[in-house]
Length: 266
Image (cartoon, rainbow, N blue to C red; front, side, top):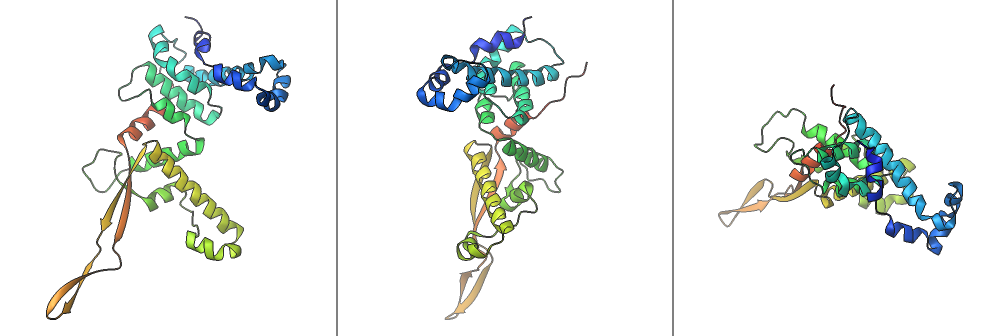
């Protein structure tokens, strides 16, 4: 069996990137790097291919360990080919082990693993991936009650998600920032920025359909006041909207598909 990297390297598409790199703007941006790699300006497209092969090689190293260096079959290679371009563009090594897990699950036809998981993984940052891990650990921890929902699909409040993100995060409110921003300490300003990042990540999970959100109206406790001999219900101050979150089924299967795997036992 030939080296998997040799078998698939020609399948990694570089056309659009090659054109962009060989443009005048591309030469100005990438020229110094090309010279460092010993490439002529006419070979700027090779910069893209160079890093693609380097990243794919690192992912294949992780993948080989997961498989205990068991060679890929021809059918397994065909199954993963559509994902290799996305995998080769992953420059952050923190995500390489997740790509290795996904490729192995796709290659071996594990139930509940979708090819679209590759697109989703390609759009996650390492920080988001680690945060998803912490959410997964929370929903999989023992629960004192049974909601009747599938395991790992339990509802999570906004404040719980914030604590999972950073239990020490205490940020000023938007109103406080508008009124007192010039009096805020550097720590308070940093906390507000971190809160913004938390909410951005939460919205990104919603965009990727990893987490779903549901808003419900909470009427609160009703008080009654007697008016002209009749008791009139009066809504209390604690009424309002309650927002709940939960991992989607897509999110559950995605997390399971990309979680770093231990090598198979001999």
